[in-house]
Length: 290
Length: 291
Image (cartoon, rainbow over all chains, first blue to last red; front, side, top):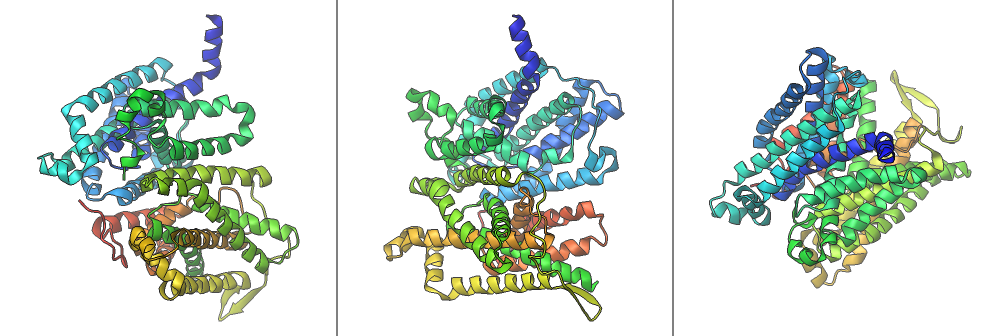
């Protein structure tokens, strides 16, 4: 028992980030499952991180309320954004959301209250590990239920064939927008939690690199089901900690794993485990997006 | 004023060289090659390595072109060719290029560390001419001239040569191209060689001009290149050149009314607006995926 406690103390940060990254991976899973490649979730994370941190830091809001306000702010911004960018598809959609992310990063640099380039420091460390994992549990449950609901089937239909889905009377734009806004809300929640886990935040944390990282978690894990993105986040976040002794070669291994997974397990890690069901699951994966 | 225009022409030339290689792969194979910034960085460091062995700068640029071109062909063999055989979508290729990029950058860091480097003293022309009150350094002028020559060369190659015709056929329809007897594998290898080689030259030249190559120097360039490609028209070579200079002039002009840390806002604001108003870009002709 004591050993377990020691383990938790030593790896608390890594364990926390595993959970946070899993939530982020689920946030992008929603749009990927709908067949849309969007890269705006890092920005939504940043918006909520700054929003909630400013609320606890400067306005003295209680932690849960600040988290909620931050996530809602991200969702509120995602709505008009989604309504505009979902006129585009494929790489154009990806690049438009990426550009939005950069605009957010630059906007944070421009607004004095955010501390600009220095970022915000001294954020009260309110996040406990159980907050992270309780959130992950709830979000996983919601995503899993949505996936097997009529909404999830509509998302699948859109991913498989947008025109066919529309001809079946599915309001395609509205369902895409729903996945996008829900993704922003979840990414925002993760952003708020991460900001209060970390003491300090900086605008550069929410840029291109983060957007790509979130995408990679989901794709490497696999998007046929909700376990995939979580697995991807767990493996790719734990790996650097496990590989600590090989620090110098860490990126090389991580890069090699990315290439190997994409080349040899294009449906993601999650489908490798379950060989029997893999054949059935094989119809969804990185294959089907963009 | 004239100083700023000169500067805009210079940085626009680098953007253009970078974006040309990027756009070439996209137009022929529909791949967003996110390892391109890593090849750019590799170019700067290949030149550095060569010059530390006493090779003159001009030859070092040629070596950077050859080494990066070779690396580009290798990149295709390892990370893209297996996906192509399986008919995987562009997203897969993008992710695997991220993996390659991580590896290349780390290999550079293992050799040179994460810090700023500089080229051997005296290996780059340092003289400055004053023409009509304008300070012009030889190095940048040569770089601009070389960049423009490469742009013209690439345009002629794609428009006029046999290889160019093959590439255009491949871009249009790979299956039909193969049926017409085009050696598709060779054409793809040539695409990657040219693309990565140009990226490498861009990196070497940018490294020369700043004289501070470092392992993260490619960061930010891919985002600028997205902007350049979208504004000019995705997959269009003259579009990329036009977009590059529009962007560099816009950035320099925006500095007069925006603080310098907001320079990037111009690129992405422009990108965003063009995407919403005219997603095919200024010179783009291809139909854009729209719902």
